[in-house]
Image 1 (cartoon, rainbow, N blue to C red):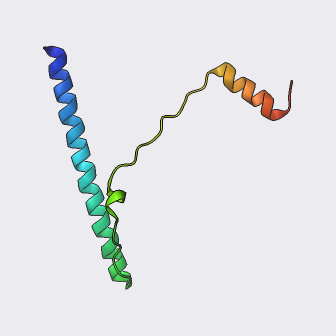
Image 2: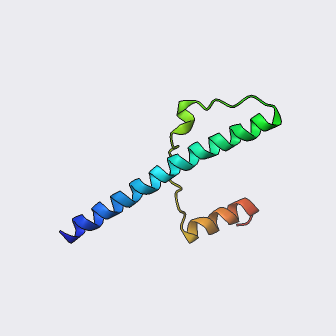
Image 3: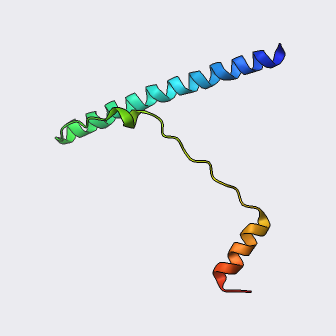
Length: 78
């Protein structure tokens, strides 16, 4: 029961953060277009796919011995 409550709270928090992100992006678009209008440029139309968050590929972490072997290989060492 307690685990479910933690998961529910975490989900609500993440949803709140995502909603805030959408609001801030809209505000940034409005401010950008306002500045462009002040400078005499036409407003920018943002395509719908630019409004979607991009998926970031996970970075594969290397172990210390892999990093050391890579450094030795790239330096021309043994």
